[in-house]
Image 1 (cartoon, rainbow, N blue to C red):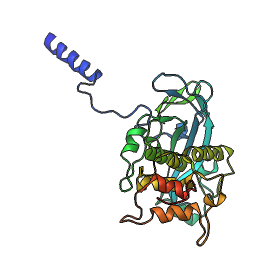
Image 2: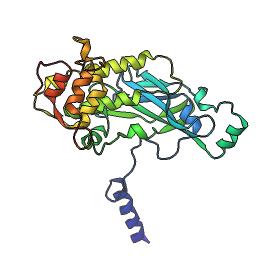
Image 3: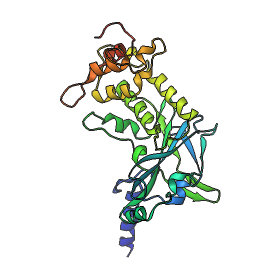
Length: 304
């Protein structure tokens, strides 16, 4: 009996210290279907520095709610509601209750539409991103390092709901940990474009204008703008990063508007230059270099 007890203790210690433990999902993310109440109710959470444990102030928190539906009056899916807030001095943020939003209540339907709905379904999900210049969410660097044009990868927060807890004061989101951003330039461009795409929510009909969204996009473009021209002209830029750079409009160019706005015909614009430089190859895109991106945004006179 004593021998069996000792074996059990050894197995327990090995499991606790990772000796025989199986891989586990990050505690920041839900491991199963998220209930409607916790998905749509008001929530609070904290963003901290993974190294120090201190709360991170003025981090941008982007929450998006998605719908996937067939039947009723809708078919398809995507982002339908978005909320952008910021953390306070202690890294704490609050998300609003969105349960009353029209997207979460089926519209009045005709008899035929109701019959059609019997063969369909409607499901909802929500996701949470955090952006703070100089930081990344834990695990993002490893994910972005694997990203290629033929095999793109997605950070966990793009497709997995965060974990939440019910408390006396309402729902709380699992603490989000950020690490220092040490991405190579091409991966930094990919990351900034990923945040931009995540925050872009276009339901039909479109929501009202959002100053918070506009400010975030401006911030992302300001960060990406100087990257190509700060590098050696021969620095390789993979096709995926070049496409991401194009998606951010090259960061814009306050000196020459013609490099910011999409032109028409043969106009010498950023859109035309980046298209001429990167379109083509066996998969529709080709690798390029930092000098070419710098030229495309008007940062140098000649194309490398």
